[in-house]
Each structure stands twice: as structure tokens, then as C-alpha cells.
Length: 285
Length: 159
Image 1 (cartoon, each protein chain N blue to C red):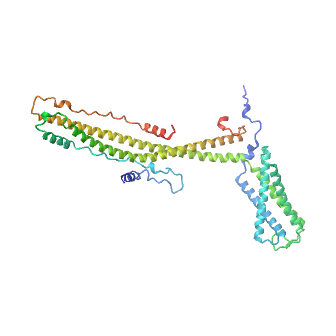
Image 2: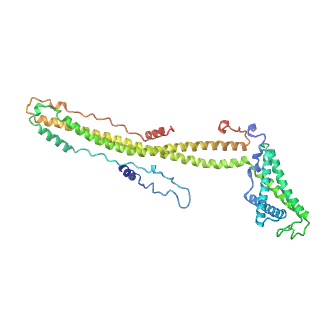
Image 3: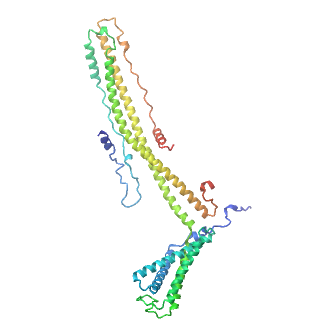
């Protein structure tokens, strides 16, 4: 009894982590939706926290503008967190090709934004606004440091979740594979359509080539017919002249009658010949 | 004017062209869009009618009888030049019509050749694009499968 050993080259020594099963499988649609909703809820909470902080720092700003600025600050914070997650995912592969300065700057900006919110909320106790959001000074029944700490915790946990999700979901190799598979399927249809159009164009050219050949044949036939009629008329004239001769000794009158030269009919052309001609013309052959 | 008339007549729709190209239910089309060059059918050109044989022979007979009394002094080729001129006139008519027919056909053939050239280069472009996408797709799949693929080289040359 013999045992076949597996070939060494079929088992890679170390599987690249871009192809790790948990990265390729991704996340189910339900999990994706739940994660998205949770991140969105965290982002809304961040927005409210930012808005409250902005009202403390800039009391003269209108409500609408405060909401817009809060949404923008939240978006920037989440983008910075997602960038950190992508940088972590790239670093995990050992194929980091970006700038360390950019990563450090992103980290500093993200943490700095949260720190600014924390400090403003903590130190900005004197400001009073007409806000009805939680944590504002008008309805504040909690110690300000605790509220500031709570805001900072919200900011950090939402950012951490975004970093984690981005690091987990970012897989450029697999994204490229999926996109290329879609492009490949589409391109196959494009090529089939283009080839079919090319065949039809060849057929159209063949069709007109056949018409030109047909006209050649008809012209040759008509000319031959006329020449034959002319020869017949010339010979008929000789016969008439011979019958009207007054001198019976002249008997060679009909010896010089014309004999029309019949052209050789062209061979019938196969359809493939026209197809070949069209291919030569198109430069494909 | 005649060219336009012929083109209008030959570009008329056939039963094949009247098949709807797109279904209303949004499903895939069975027939592709038909360009005008694809609709052209053979042109029913008419050749000039052949001369009446009896009329020609009758005319020869009239001329021959008019030579009565002088035939003995002439030769049998007395009417040959005249008959040759008739034949030349008949052939000239045929050549004229032939030239006109070929001109009409060549106009359409040139348009079909233009379509052929455009289709040829389109097909080449699409094929090259397919090769490029296939190569990138296979290289990407190989990298995900753990194979070492040299970047910058076509995948087909590495396997």
C-alpha cells in the first residue's frame, strides 16, 4: 500500500493575509446593516456632542450653522478614524506604502479634535445657551467634568468602532478581484457584440461584392448577345447578296462571314471567396 | 436623382427589420440594433432591352436589296461596317448602364466598407481590453490564492 504525498508547491508556505478566509468572506448583509446603523447612531451622538460643545465655544453662531459645523466635525472625525483603520490594515500586511507622517498627523488630528471637545466642554462652564440638547448649561444638573468625560468617551468609542470596521473590511486585493470579475463578465459580452457586428459588416461588404460580380456577368452576357446578333446580321447580308448575284461564277461571297468570339464565362464564385476578400480588406486576415 | 430613388427603394424595411428590437417587459433583446447598411438588399437593375432580331434582319434585307445590281461589283463585307456601328451603339448603351449600376453599388459598398473598418477596430479594441482585464483578473486571483505574481508582467507569461 502506497501513500501519495502531496506536492510541496500546492501548499503555500504562508498564506497572504489579504486572502485570509475571514477577510474574503466579509460580513453578511445583515451584519453589515447592523454595523452601519450602529456607526450611524454613534455618529449622531457625536454630532449632538459637537453641537453642544460648539454652542459653548461659539454662542453667537446660529442653530443651523451649529448643526452644520457639528456634522462636518463628526464627518472629519470619522474619516480620520477610518483612515487610521485602513492604515492599520495595510500595516498588518507589511506592505505599507504610505507616509508615516500622514498617519501620525491623522492620529494627532483625530485625538486633538476629541481633546478639544473635551476641554471646551469641561472648561466652558460659564457659557449659557438656549439649547435644549442634553448636557447644555440650561438644563445641566450634572457636574461639567463628568459630562465632558462622557462626550469624550462617546467620541472615542465611535472612533474606535470606525477604526475597527475599516481595518476589518478594507481589503483592496479582494475589492479589485470582485471588480475585475464584474468587468471581465461585461467585457466578454462587449467582445461578443463587437465580433457579431464585425461579421455583419463583412456580410454587408460581401453582399455588395456579389452585386458587382452579378453586374459583370450581366454586362458580359448582354455584350455577347449583341455581338452574336451583329454577326448573324452580317452573315445574313452575305446570304442575301449571294442570292441576288447576277454572275453565278462569284460563289465565294459567303466565305468571309464574321464568326463572333464567345467570351469564356466566369466561374461561379463561392460565398467564401467574397468573405475572404472582405477580411483582406478589413486587415483581419 | 435616380441614385436617391434606388437607395430609397433598396433601403426599405423587410420582414426581418420589422421585428421589434426591444421588448416592453425589459428583458434582454433578442435582436441587435440593425444599422441601415444591414438593411440593403440586392438592387433590381434593368439592362437595356436586346434589339429586335426580326427588325434588324429586316433592315439588313432592305439595305441589301437597295444594292441590287451593284452586288456583283462589291464584296460580302459591304454592310459589315454598318452592322459593326450598330453593335458598337448597342454595347455603348450596355456600358453606360453598367457604369451607372456599378456607381450606385459602389456607393453602398463604400459605406459598408466603412462600417467594416469601424467594426474591425472596435472588435480589436474590445479584444485587447478583454485580454487586459483577464490578465489582471487572473493575476489578482493568483495573488489571493497565495501564488507569487511578478507585478508589471502579464500573468499569461508567468504561468
